[in-house]
Length: 130
Length: 275
Image (cartoon, rainbow over all chains, first blue to last red; front, side, top):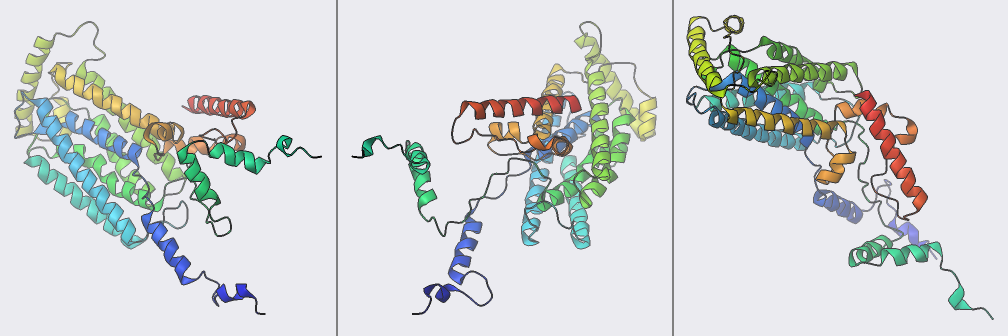
């Protein structure tokens, strides 16, 4: 009588396709890692306080500094969230692992990230002038 | 004759009975014992910060650019349509000028507990401290006695007028600093001071969550936030405390609860001593 367990073995040692598909579906359905809230909040608040200290948009009256500050903070938050979404999409596209360690970012990733961040920076400057 | 009713249950039976008290636990029991052979290991919740992941590193690298935003607005206020305040201390912006490349270098080649991380964190702390000093000076938190809000508002309005004239004449940062008005209070309205106070309070909360990751953020937010400063603090702990248990063990044994409390106290005292 043949060994029934040998029927489920594959030659390359990998699990059968049905189990691989089940694992892939489970990985796709698993929740994404949470955003780095503390770091994001720290950077956003530090930049917002710096913005308030630096001044306010010329379109606003000097008598309403709080409204001008809130306007600047809202613009900064919108651009920062958009940048985070773009970074998360790029990380998924490049399949950056959700693990710690290993090699660092490659040179194309650094160049693209730098160019994209400068683009978001210019976008924020343009939005703050309006 | 054996009395089967007096036979003590096996440990597995006791655990199954304990897990089956509530519907949620019954479901957990079913899922745990459904496929005992082919069951895959459940993804464990990360309870200890071990470093930033690659997507986080990439996001922090990209978001380092925001350090220079206020500095650029101050330096090129006229070009960018920005109304500069009357007096701007160059100290936070100089610290930011040093922190900007350090942050890019740190996150571009991120290694836990590396020298670049130490330099970046130190410069970021220096920038925050200088910015806090400027806020305290601008809001008159260091002024003795109750501030005269009406006189401060008049002085601030005069400062704004002077700054506009100065910016038109020589739009440089140091010139604006040299032409500082004598008024100590730059945030004219109390609403603006309140706004800055709230922002600083929120920043302190985020810094607290960042440093004390993941114990408190796990309890408050439901998940662990990431940490830069906490990296060093957690790694410098003794190996015995390197794996804190956020939740009590399955068996609520009094000794286990005491061990958990001792570990949390030791962790708090160590972090406070490091700060």
